[in-house]
Image (cartoon, one colour):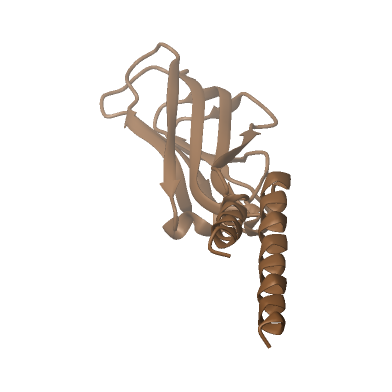
Length: 199
């Protein structure tokens, strides 16, 4: 019986380790339906991005969200001292900003902004934007004291998560467990026979 017990215990250990979850990612691309976005000097313009799906907690545990943005824009009026601009990606109802850029509006060459942020769990004020069921729609809000045009926009939302653990016994584990249980039953039978024989 001493030889059989380790086999049964080993099988249980193997069964417990099967189904351990590994990290996974899910990526969505977000764009703007109509470009260019023309912003007059001193104006503020908000344009909705395409909606994206939030992460459903039923799929697993969300560890982090990464938002990567690429925005191309250029100024289209003469520069004046003190000119400045700001671009921000935000959720309009809560006014929570997830990415942005601001600075002096002095150059004339097109500007390509490569930005974004990573939000680790528990996500703070950004949690309702990324976690739950349904869709989220962000806006690109642009303000400039100098006229500009946004000619390109691309964003990706990447969910880094641990999938729900599903226990699936491996066939080899079941075979070892079965052998161990059969051995235990045989040992118990032999023990009973010895007791009856000794009477």
